Structures are given as C-alpha cells and as structure tokens.
Length: 225
Image (cartoon, rainbow, N blue to C red):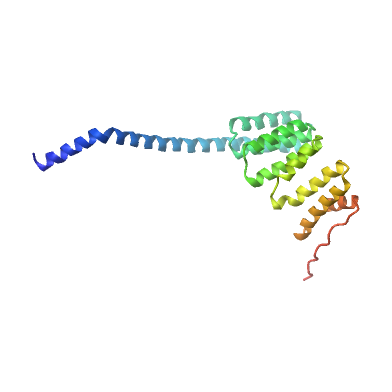
C-alpha cells in the first residue's frame, strides 16, 4: 500500500469515528450564529417599532398638556401606551410608556392605576438610577392614596445619595400629614442640610421648614468677581 493509500485510509477511518460529531458541532455553531443574528435583528426591529410608537405617544401627551380634557387624545394615549407595554415590554420605551400612563393617571386622580403602572415599570428591572426615580414617584402616589407606611418603606429602600434631599423632603411631607411634627422637622432639616452642602436652594423646602418653625441652613455666598 502506498503512502497516499495509507493517508486516505487514515482519513476514512477518522471520519467514520468522528465525522458525524464534527458535522454536528459545525451545525450547532451555524445555528447558534444564525440564531444570534436573528435575535439581534429582532431586537433592532422591536426597538425601531417601539421608538415610532413612543414618538406618537409624546405628541399625544403634548396635546393633553395643551388640553387636559381632550378625551380623544386620552384614549389614544391609553391605547398606544398599552400597545408598547404589551408588544415591546423589554424595551426602554415600554418603561417610558408606563411612566407616562402613570402620570396621566395621577392627573386624572386615578391613584390605583398610577400605582399599577409604576409597579409594572419596576418589574422591568430598570437601571438603578431609573429605578430610584420610579420608587420616588411610587412613594408619592402611595402617600396620596393613604398608604403612608408603604410609602415610607419604599423611601427607606432608596439609597441613591443624589436623591437623598428629595427622599427626605417627601418623608417630611408624609410625616407631617401623619401629625408627626418633630419627625417631619428632622426630615426637612436633613434634606436642607444636603442641599446646603451642595450649595443649592429649594424655596418650597424653605416654606416647609418655616411651617415647622425652622429656617434653612446658611449657604456660602459666592464671592463677587
């Protein structure tokens, strides 16, 4: 047997042993690649479609700002908002749609619906900063709907330092509604101290401090150039 025949025999033997496995591995690789490309294309198509619907939602929202009693615009807002949430729930536009519907529900004094939309948005597991802002809104809605204790628990879980003044101010509002004057004053002071450290002022908070017999902390005056 020549060397060429020996090589051919070895190749045939190897192929009989391992050829099917190799083909299967290649096929799996190709299917995985094709699946990944399909997933990417599908995600892109979803994002584009959701973005188009969100632009419509923004236009409708502007109509409602100009005319809150526009029932046709309100119906369109509800319909398109739900469409985005139902058909593209994993897109950022779906979270935005839920927040817009929640805001509209608050404007309509439907606090139960607002809470439902905000909790749906939280269920999408948004980024930490977005989640914290949603929790702040939800706490306000809960407090307005006579769920003060739930609101305080929600606020206690918000750890973003940038939101600390807002969180403490809302805590103060809730505690004041409950008649806890000293606790409200302490919360307002904490909010004001954080703002003072950043050199910021909040006139509305100053009024709230005055209501509990306090004054804002002094701010450093900028030097005159």
